[in-house]
Image 1 (cartoon, rainbow, N blue to C red):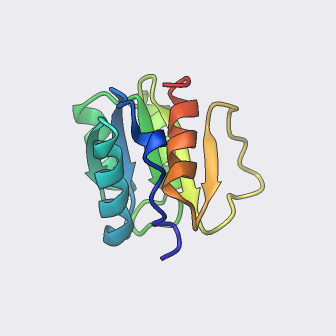
Image 2 (image 1 turned 120 degrees about the vertical axis):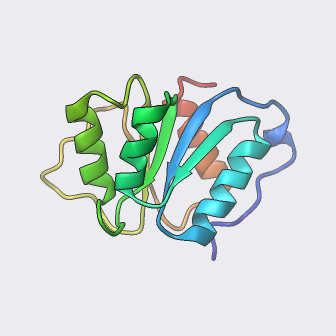
Length: 135
């Protein structure tokens, strides 16, 4: 896939100490994203859909949540809405990655980032860093 473009060595020089949850149903994408974020020094947990993501949020705190939109069982928007409603997202910031547009009626707060698929890992790191406050 096109999104697996590796970042330059200079952009990987300083590891971040972020706790990140990756919620992605496509195993190959999830595996690459998790490996990349761990190489950046992040503590990364993973979930295959929104239901698993909610379970992960009930058991741990995260700084940033990277979530796909189109997933089986519970999609990314439903996951985000339920996490907000239940108050289990804590202070985590969301970064949505998606090949499909978000629903037009969805009003996301300014601190929720959206990057389209396909994306580069540099794009992902930029969104994660921005979501985490420039870490």
